Image (spheres, rainbow, N blue to C red):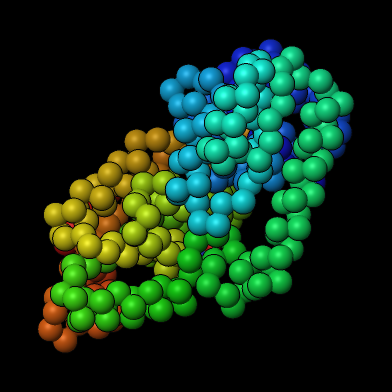
Length: 300
Ligand code: GH3
Ligand code: MG
Ligand code: MG
Ligand code: MG
């Protein structure tokens, strides 16, 4: 079943589109504005997005720009809906990264056809990616979260360490471990645990720069390779992530939320006898300290 995400701040319009598309057999989710949508993309994982342009907090155009920056190989088609019939507005939508444009008031037959076209594109891109092995197990991606996996982490670390050697650049490693994750699984089940991991992955990705690499290191552990970042910068980044995790509840099922915290350990690359393993070991040690000191903390 294909998933359609509607980004619309009018509950009436949202409702009408939801009814229309649900009747056509789509699974439909509604986000109220660009900020909501950025989070929801990670949990709902839409195949196509239908978005207003003018929205509270973050516009539809900014939302797509952010998604393109934050999400590797971004490929979710976005149909913009607007009451403007100005050429300038249509062009802005396409420039921002939208794939299509529909004029309001929305003609239902036209919208359904445009959704079908967008889904055909998405499906062919997905199968192309599968063929390339990007989504296959044994590739460089973790299938649950879509993040890079341990194998990619090892490659990337080797590259970055070579850069440190050659150019004397700075490199830090941040390890993150979800606090008491076993309890989440035990109390709510593995599917909820999985959902927390997916949401976590999304929050981490949306909080790093393009030069940082977020990986699922294993289980409920994540690693962020922060290039050109010193200890102070990495600490600020880890603190920001810690807050993003701890301050906003995680949506796990219809309306149900969970509070989640996480602990962080940081190590900075030295130029002498440093290997991926020595960096991991020091970050792990710091992480252990963070756990020992009460969790929901950053240590280095
Ligand atoms: P701590 O605060 O000390 O880190 O406690 P914890 O419970 O998070 O630590 P522990 O390492 O004992 O537990 C990790 C749990 O993560 C155990 C394992 O079943 C669970 N886990 C690992 N991978 C997955 C996964 O892909 N999905 C789900 N749902 N659970 C997973
Ligand atoms: Mg762990
Ligand atoms: Mg553990
Ligand atoms: Mg843990």
